[in-house]
Image (cartoon, rainbow over all chains, first blue to last red):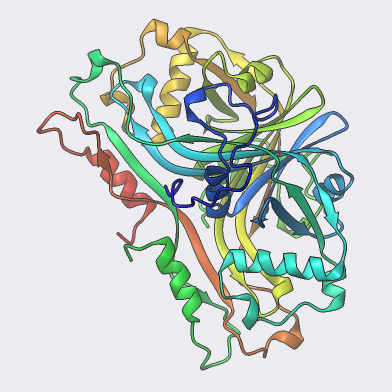
Length: 233
Length: 233
């Protein structure tokens, strides 16, 4: 949706496609520029981390944040996924945003609009407490900007009890489908509605915790976040 | 959200957790009953298919439909993912729905509400043309119910040009987080708003194809689909 809204190009504004990141099907949908990859990563909130254990694939969803030229994930030191990833195994981290259902005139040409990114690489564990705290801040701020400064800050024990991993944004590619249906010329006159039914992840009305003390109002940053994600409301 | 809305239990209403599907982290969030797994699969529209090639993990997003005790995926015979999967390699297919941001009083206890399913197994290719056509129908009907009967039906060439795979729903588990923040007792009085900011994938206003012939109105089934996904509108 806002693929072109971010024009911050780094020195190397293009990812170099590799055997692991080159888009083979529909190569016209492939994007290797950093701006597109970063915009998708900054719009989505969940990634799927793929790794191999005993020859078997595992795909685990988790939240993440992009921080410059890396993404950060975190969780319990007991998480198997984080333990495997911290051990340096090869990862494929995929992020997908579903933008709409594409209704063509022909059944065969039905499709979906989407934006996805695949990152291939190995994770490194962030061990230094100040760097871990900065990562925890980035992850909370990713959820709702403005949140971090208001909440009870992590204790040393909580920092120690959080495993933080970084995955470099070096080998990555995006795949994007936008726009309406593409039907055969001979189907253009087929008498059925055709077009796109857009989809977007939208916030509903915030639900206060039942234990909330009286007089604590919904913060403005939550209202702004909701508004930004759903301008029509 | 509607985890309990579907009570259709099959003869074997529970999946048996295996080394590949047992939820290790937060076992209280694990669900092994078929009704929960099926409800999540029926609510989401994209799965992430993980497989191993030359020792490396790959995670590819694709649409799917649950059809009884299997899921169906499809695409071009040239798709590398489908080619690998058709060859019978081990797969992990993960589906994730993001339901909300959980704002706790402590930074450490921020979380997300989600529903996810992991299916482990191997795919079989559906080769018989009538069975492939039925799968194509199920996939289009999954996008928007009511669509199939209105559109130009697949030709034998289009059926031949579609690879359809089925993955049995035998080894699967769900992981679900719902509800509000869980803070430490000593943080309950921390003076910050706490609660859940819900998220849901919602349809926007349909966008007609620019080439649409005059007089073709938006079908009722698109309106109903939009309404069902977004009752507030």
